[in-house]
Image 1 (cartoon, rainbow, N blue to C red):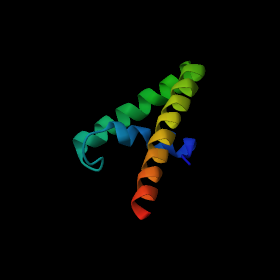
Image 2 (tube, rainbow, N blue to C red):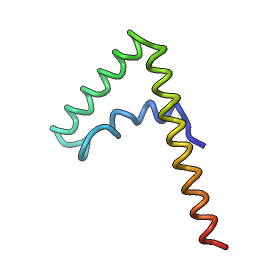
Image 3 (tube, rainbow, N blue to C red):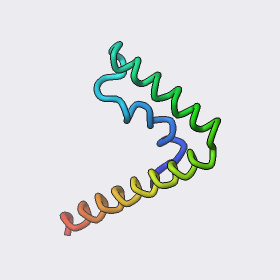
Length: 74
């Protein structure tokens, strides 16, 4: 089960390439965080729609991984 609130919190870090404790990646992380908060304020319906779609995709990935791990145990 995928936690939607956690996905929203972790999304800026997932969009960055590299370690977010380094200066270049930290700047990108803050930029993504600002842009996502701006999208959330200005267009909450679109933000929620995109979040639901993302959680759906992550659920499918999670189910596929569980099926693969269950097949290997048998």
